[in-house]
Amino acid sequence: MTKEQPSITVRDVAAKAGVSTATVSRVLNGDPKVRPDTAERVQKAVSLLGYRMNQVARSLKTKRTHTIGIIAPEFKNDFFMSIVTGIEDTLKQIGYSVVLCSSRENRKEEAERLQLLKEKNTEGVIIIPGSNKGEHFNIMKGTPVVLVDRLVEGFESDAVLSDNFQGSYDAVQYSLKNGATHIGFIGGKRTLTSAKERYGGYKKALQDNHRKSEPEIILFGDYHEDSGYQLMKTLMERETPPDHVFISNYFMHLGAARYLLQSDHKGLHILSFDDLPLAAFFPYASIIVAQPMERIGREAAKLLIQRINGSRADTKIIRLPTSMRILE
Image (cartoon, rainbow, N blue to C red; front, side, top):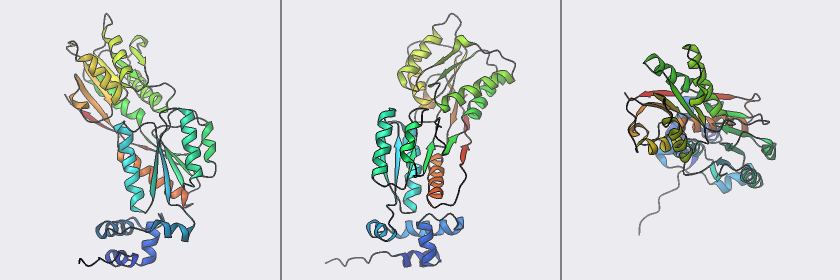
């Protein structure tokens, strides 16, 4: 009969990391005062030894659930799920489990999910909002919340975002410096902060290069594939179509690509947000603005744990830089 392997304990982790058991406990409980190099040693030891905390015993002892709620608009979206991966990986290292919910970009469902997470006594919530309205977020009063990717009106909270303005500015600026004459714009919902910021970067690049805005080639949709198809069709069927088009997210880019495969548009260049699978292979792809998706998730998890542990009083909004991938 195979001899059962002894359980890995906190003492084993402490010995492997060269620290005290108290330090291991502090790291596992997300204490931000632990030195980063020490925390990294402990987390490596946890991973190498395969240490798993007994969550039931831990909750009974600390009277805490060590559970975090995550709400995303949908699960089919690679961008959202990459963020969720970053959140989950970070929380797992310090012994937190997650409850994952979808709002389907519906405010009523979002409110229901928030209520559910409140009733489950989750210690905090990380949410990618489905709209720009935040009245229903008051359900979470007394529970730490971190917003991701988008801000909402009427609700002050920690948040982690990409630098959407600078990302679009850089792509448009590069194109203008390299021969673009008319840059069309396909944007998302104008009510979403990410859509507004990307449009703002586009406009500022035009202004800084003494180019007039052309309202007839500036169109807004809803960040979904069909929207991208229809708006690209509208632009390309103009008597004088633009020679460059900036597309505000991957899924509208996918829809636009579906349209562009049907006919020839020699000389067209596409600038787009989100370096997701296949984006670089879409027709006429020229520049892709990449967001640090998993890093967004990691930073959101860290902010939430700091808030849960009471180590910060001020509201913090982190804007992470994007990177530009030139395909030409």
